Image 1 (cartoon, rainbow, N blue to C red):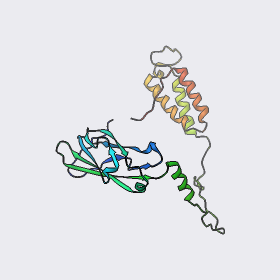
Image 2: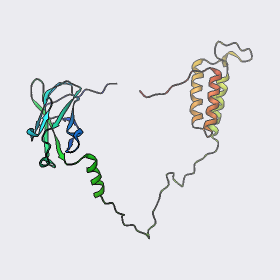
Image 3: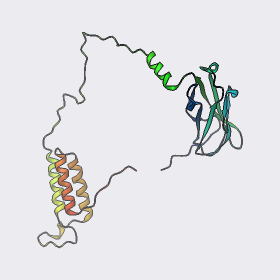
Image 4: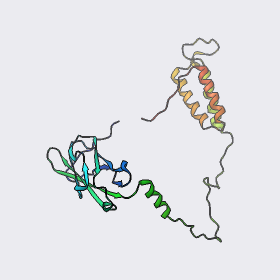
Length: 239
């Protein structure tokens, strides 16, 4: 089932772009180029344009274009001013969306960009070393209270479920009766069951045995009975 269409009404709409921020590392050449992914989940094509607070420090491949409905585009951003003086400075990219071809503004999203000295691994290691975790104060005299997952005032009855037992015996007996069309002189014709009735008894027996106490043994017995009677397998699934 396809999701319902997302229409663009008059006014502002959310702009879906990932990631929300990009980070360049001075000593890691693999991070000098980042990718922003812009999504268009709407039912109309949109025109996008990428702006920046520091356009002289970045090069953007295809900073504007047309994005078809229910499509996405990768916007490649390359940092071109890799110097110590530009480290720890927060720049911003603004992605503006317009209806196409009316060019009416429908939304915008800002993405932060910063250049950090070093590499990703060295900065993460430094952050871990700076984080100091200490023990929280405890109350030695107070006993901690714990709660049982099962209410203690209710005892679980694990005895024999006679209703399920009788229902299972009836279903097994019905499954062993001859099917309509089979010749059996010992059993009268009104006890010859149709295939549909046997499918119903098979389903009821499967449900009863799944919730019985001896599940594994009963389920094996049910599979044996079903195989012996050559009954079709019932499938379950989500629509």
